[in-house]
Length: 361
Image 1 (cartoon, rainbow, N blue to C red):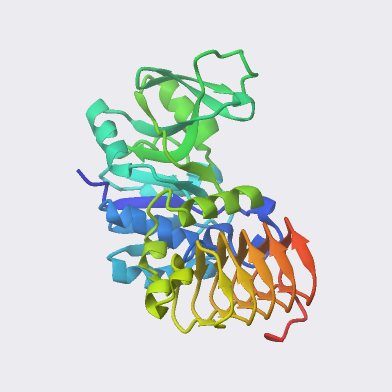
Image 2: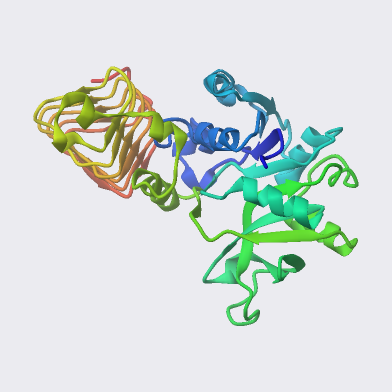
């Protein structure tokens, strides 16, 4: 069994916890181990059988438009669903499913997971549910809405229960759903929430909701710490990620075993005396200078520049970001065009673009 031919990704969040990084690039379009995060997420859906992927985005669709061409070679038709005014987590999905006569798979666009969506769809079909929700376990339920299970059936929703008040129930919404055809038609146009309205209303009206507990990789990428944690998971091979898996191995290309595990795009320039500590991703046209130390857990997107004697670890460098000579950068997220000046030492920083940068200098 494969997934429904149409899948939807909710990708209109503002990414406020990732500012200033997300000020110039929407959170789901940030570079993630070889391509924008949404490209990897969509390709995982394609591998499971989806052929059309709709992106529920904000008022401005332009930042997402490159995905149409980027994903076409992988057999995916991408269509963009704009929200001129915010419609919460389900309003845009409702608009996109009007008239659809088959189930639809819905994913949050800021969640990294190795969820087997084919198995999720299979349980949905087998139980005849109006909606099937992927769940994950958390050690502290006090900041989540808990889905109370009886076997696979969801029987109640409890919002942010204090520790110890709901013993035996630690499963929360993991941000992936299968919706039967017409499941959203009873709800009016406009803002609509899965968590506060759709799922409780379906439950109260006697519809079956199935919960499938996922025990594997799951993390939302909404904070700098979680984004870097997700990057580390993919770099360390915790789950398949198609854009990362496509990249060539620099050790194999150059015959240098010390550079094994460093994945590269095209036209990458690495000084012979640079130290590369895998896992590392160097995108198209990335430059690494003499005596530089890069890695582990570094992703440098297209056109990024790591200058002579710089030291970069556990970091994302977006397009055309610059780490200048002798600078030390760790646990950082650098926006497109961001600059770290010569000799600087930065750790745990989320840096916006340099408004005065006129190119690499």
